[in-house]
Image (cartoon, rainbow, N blue to C red):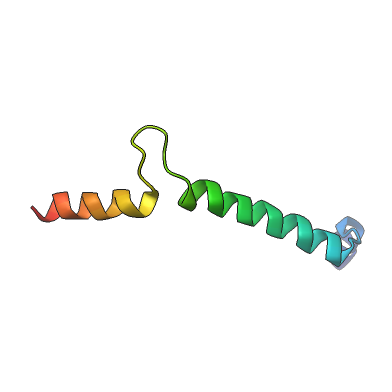
Length: 57
């Protein structure tokens, strides 16, 4: 079992992997949270607040 796993592990440069991963993550956050939705112009946090206000009456 261990031999099967060892054969599939590939070495990577940790500095490059961190740069790439952080860039992917930060772009995901910017697109998902910080930019307004083109359909209504609201950011997700504002949409949640309005929905909660609507839900509470």
